[in-house]
Image 1 (cartoon, rainbow, N blue to C red):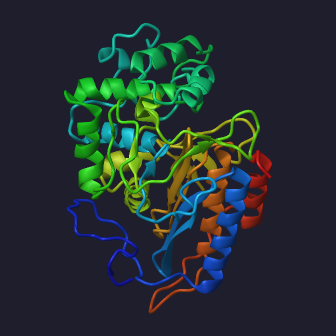
Image 2 (tube, rainbow, N blue to C red):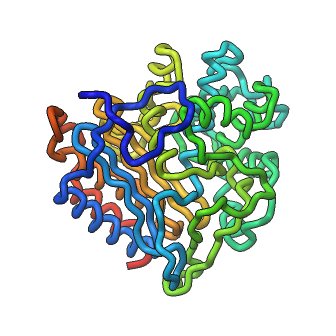
Length: 399
């Protein structure tokens, strides 16, 4: 495949990470119609007035589109350059910092967290276990979610969140099983600041934003409650009233910190998803270790597992989740370069809706006709668009 301009973006920025080449053309119209229909349907299920979606199939083309309006009942259209809250994709960025420090020889994945953070109740937990969600810690969001929505601008201290998560921990031994939560990543952020000797914001700049060329991304302070312009409003339904969602556009990113506090754009998140999925920022040994996954447990299909900071769904790798007002997902296939970024400016539906939408869009794009002399990759996704549509409907609260 010829090396072409990375489509749908402006590349006048420094970057030391190589990303996939991309056909600089629109995806075929039949595929874009399927994408548009899926996004419109998902917006209704999520009670989201707007969405930003990007789908990049390097052999075929790309579709970067904004849908709906910036606020409920408003008439200002969404635009693709708008800033939004990265939510759980921040977790993958936090682990990128850790893996970068590993490559620098400043830390090891099996280092005890207690070597860097003097908190009671974390004995026997390693840095790598925090990143892979196998620490056994409980989730502070069960305690504070209502507070986050009802008092979104309140600043939170990492120790307060982590202490609650520790108190909620069960009997699972560290390293024994996957259990997704936010506590481990906030604790990891605390450790990284001590290891790196600087703020987490500076560490994101050094290990994530600058090398990947994410010029519109940042980790704002606890007191920075508004998004940089341009930006949409964000909404959360309270009490089941889908007709009158609460505007939670202004919030303190400290409510999730290293588990969800980053602000980004669709193109920046595309760049990150591709780099993270391929292990491009890391040495070969660390990139291999990054995707030594653990099963998700229960009745989860075997094609779903978890690496260091991200999910492996078939050949797609990435992360998804929500923060009050926003739900975000980003996945990329390191072999084909197929990449999907989804942002809904509402956080009402369960987070599986935004991941199901992303995987549905990947299904449509995976068979897009090739442009020029390119070749369509062999089909490799172990799910169908119809299955993902059903998953979206199953977790929706507004229908």
